[in-house]
Length: 73
Image (tube, rainbow, N blue to C red; front, side):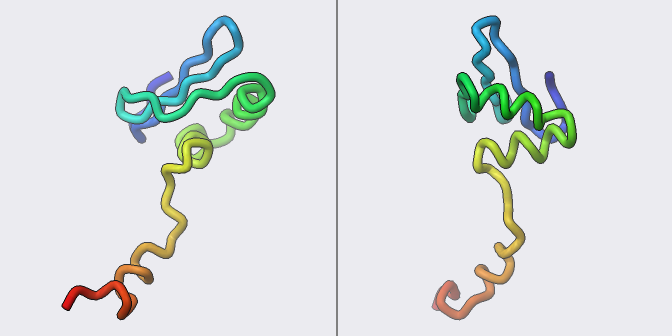
């Protein structure tokens, strides 16, 4: 399944799920984790795949970027 957000997943016949990001394997899920992912992926596939791979932004990037500790001098 391909989508415009860059994430896609493929379910193999042995139950393994491979999540890719822009064509590169991001993570492989097996067993119970794969089943849990497949039950959850119907809601918002891009968001769910980003969360399962850990490749998502949590909203505080701008705050951290502007923090004095992170300013280059």
